[in-house]
Image 1 (spheres, helix red, strand yellow):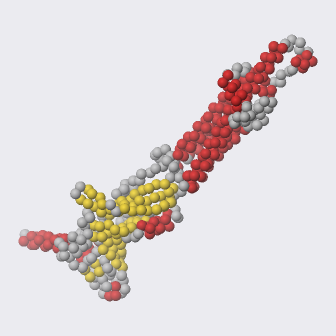
Image 2: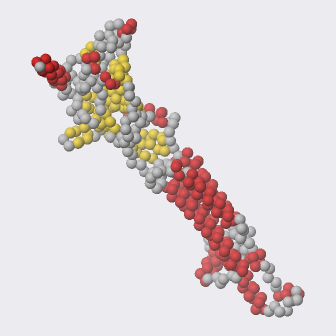
Length: 436
């Protein structure tokens, strides 16, 4: 009973001697025979016994912990242990040794934005210098919260933050500092990132505000990491194929509107574009609506509109060749306005020129309704039953067919110009976003 009480009193005295100011003392390693036998296993036992406590001689003085990192996920933590020192001249010139981290006191530095389980490998080593400076390099994969703005994907630039702080120790016990300057961290990270990855490091900035939690004040260092996505992969796999399909669809306007191959060709392109979007869906961001999604939606809308316009024109030309309906006044005025040489409307057939051998092709009105015989031809062919009223009716029908053909030609031309405007705008937008 008395013996157990003695051990409890001795343990309490040991703990208090480590915590009270000015009661600790440095521990000098006896490294005689380093060159022949290496470091004795018991040389650092006195230091290892103190690993549960912050290594300071005066407990009222905070431990300065310097941190550094690279974007390749290596956290570099440096601090001093005043209980460790040796003379390199007496130790065969050895000025640095490696020790298992499980035997040392480690500062509880963590990243506030960290959102995953720490998967740092076990059994890591730390290097200790003869002056008691400990350097611990911790490889870690950081899955952090980052407020992403993906509107300009794949030409987006993101600004993420990495906040380093102590979980337990307040500013009275741990003071955070920089092991390297920010420009050194940036240069090292840029050299590493240039060799792999889809992101380009633009720069790193830092801030050192204090964090107040209740009555406690914690030291922290905030790094602002600016990165930019490399867009070549997405341009070659998303934008270029989509632009090719839209361009081919625009060139399909050169097919005659009355052709039986024009509508099936556009349907095939539309189906191919939908398959392309399904295959490339994994390359798009899982959340949000980037600008490239709006581009794809506009491309799909144009192709659907082009198909609907082709179906309408085919129906209109078929109706005009069988029983042409009367032309509304507003449409007649529009055709007269657009066929006026002084206006800047698309090229619609002028007087005396149907323009059907130009963009986009439709058949001649004479081919659609057949060649109408003139009065003299009627007499020579022996058709005395033909009257002037019948000739006027045929001429009026030919005029109506000509107007509907002009209207079809005008719709094709306007939609073709809309395609050209959309493609030109898309190319200019891509160039601007890529260079800014």
